[in-house]
Image 1: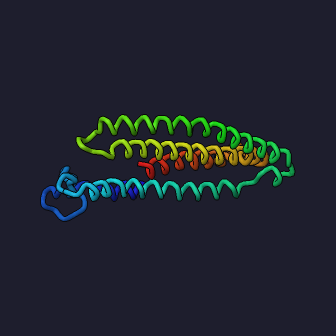
Image 2: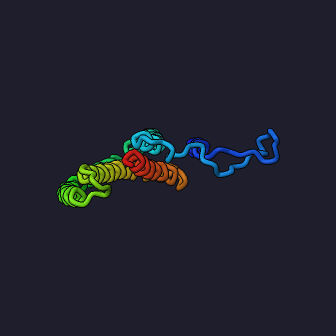
Image 3: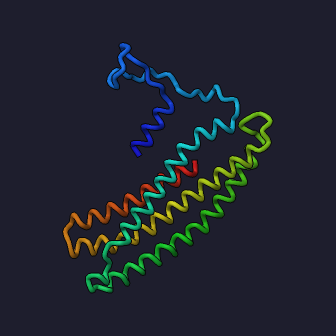
Length: 203
């Protein structure tokens, strides 16, 4: 992630030379943009230039989530320490959490649809840009996509959290507190990067 951030900075700023030297220590950022978006006449190209870095960061985050989830799923569960009741309880927690999300998302779907219609009507009547007839549709689409990304991040977070609970318990039971913390942090990192990745892709 740091490397990507550095590349983005290089795309935005051009370094100036101080003192006329040729060594790396003589280069400083003078604040001159290497690429001025205002010089690009095509709106689509400007939007593409702004969107591609976010899309790349989002995809990288989601790929990292897959790596973290794979690492999490490789950890021991109740059957590995001959305590099958832990897996039984974990399955009940998982099924209950999915049932909760299913019921919650039913109401949220109705809420989002209603507000999408309101937004579409309002911005069609009073568009953000003069004579922009598609503002209402675009704003409603952004609302719906944002809601879908939010719901998906909640689903991913719930799945990872419920998978991590039993594995954290087992890690503490047969190892040390530090072992349990490592498993818990792996689950937490997967949830966090999932939210960041979906947010970046959605933007």
